[in-house]
Length: 458
Image: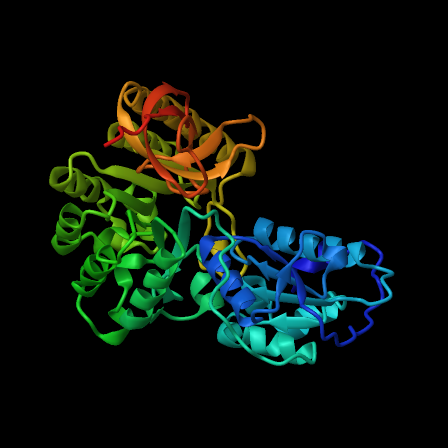
């Protein structure tokens, strides 16, 4: 059953085919979900060639492209609504643009069933066609295929580098392996070339992403030193200032990885580990035997790198989670004092083992537990950021603040883009893409405020 059946209630526009055009291709894109989708969308725009012209108004486009998320039902509903809103926006145009939908929702539910439910869409593209998305769309538009390099959509300061696709883990609550397929590591040479290209464009921070970074190379039968070796090579890329890791599974935190973090100057001591819970009973039921002792893993990191920033995500309300299990989780959060923490309520996704487990937790209990944990983390975060006031930090400037003239949005080393707080910064030499030194003058629950230090003249 597709997700669209309960929310497809709007009037449907007619589905006329687009006319072929020979001028610059005007493209409107929307990327939903995780940074992995962001990378896929950027590469798609590059595949469309040098003549592509991104436009902000969908009504002015020749091609409309939506890269969907299909991880959990709320994300699927958001994807469907985005498609229907878009179809309504272009309804009645004499020259209807090509409406293309790609990504995880398509991989999860299949092109044929989605095409029956949402006939407004002209082209459906599955995740396993990713390398051919541009070629397929240009063929549908009757245009030649002359691909170019990836077109970045992030601010000039940072870019994502996806080092592998898919996942070989089988967590009981997760749909990712069935959507994105098994683990497939990208060739080392291609990653280094892409990193060099991004640095050559002025990018100062590379954010490494994968479903599990530490699993890199395991599909090829390589040992776990291959990922630290890759980090050392990436750390040598000229022009890069920061190298950040997102999505490190606990069992992949090896002595070799910790040594690389200590020794590679650009590699930030920022550990993002999706622990999901602290109690061994819940972790076992989640199918996460490699996370049985999360406290021990956190202790290993802090012993090796005392100033490390630890970030994690937790799930509350997993089937069978009792008040005792939740108290264990609260005690764990208080003891660990994570620099950053995200909390999600369990969602019983169709097709997962967890959806069929007994002792499902009521929605209001899940929401209450999430709120309790977030209030607890808010106090921890406030205390951690207060300690930064009076220090001098490198701040990577992302964007101009849209509300306050002269103010910019930036980040210090323990703040990842999109998922963490930010550092509001003003002063000399502050501009998007710049890295400046700043005195931290103020803090709040999740954000910092800094004043750039004027450079000394030689």
